[in-house]
Image (cartoon, rainbow, N blue to C red; front, top):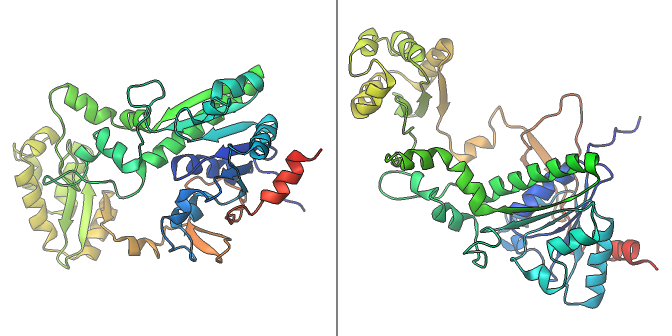
Length: 377
């Protein structure tokens, strides 16, 4: 029995992309069955050169480019411009994260592409919004973390910090993917494509809504490391065996259960300084110190047993190496020119449906075949 077609089978996506945000978006389209033709500059997507840890290749590139075809394309060459036109003419989606204005130099600005191809969904990803005061500035993940204030609410009191993964790029790729899927759904009703603009700054500002509202109310949040600015106790406490554990108390019912069944300190919950969350936050140092003293009397296995039995949320503060063998980890294996690479699976599971993940292309691996297909006279 042949496998059922994937949800986006038959969809053609052309991507003029590099680095992380746009490739994240198109990798998910490829995972869902779309044919993704990646147009790379002759020297390749610069994400190919970030490191060599994934079977001799870049971890970023292997993660974000499975299931795509790689074609070399320099729009300054007449033959490559003709190839670009031929591809876009048959495409359902065109994704690009070139510097704003680059496509316009070749007469292929997004609005012009939409005029030529009314059903085409065009998605342009940039650092700052096109038409805004900073549209020409180069922008990368960490720069936007700093510019949008994300770094200001990350880390400990001593200094701002970087979120440890490319969170801005991932968020932007996710926003682009959502917008593309909305546009494709709308096209089924109207027959018309869309011109979508997504900026890394705008996406990050949206994610910063809660700190923004606190700052607008005159209460900008402080950096407090692995703790919650609005909830206590919600932080890290060391067990007697030294293993750090993070607990989260979400309401007064859970607070009472923690005191009675985990800490075995019923007086703690009724003390006026700790009886409600607002007071516990106001007296955070005392709250945390008292919880810490109880944790220090029991080893992590005993605490985990008590917390589970009490249905209190907790986590072990693991190293990345702990993730490699974590019992909850779902992993996939993708083929690359350097050999198979194991990595975490995408988060969504479709029950009863199997998903295959394509190989990671070598630079220009599909160049000749795609040119024959799309430039055949």
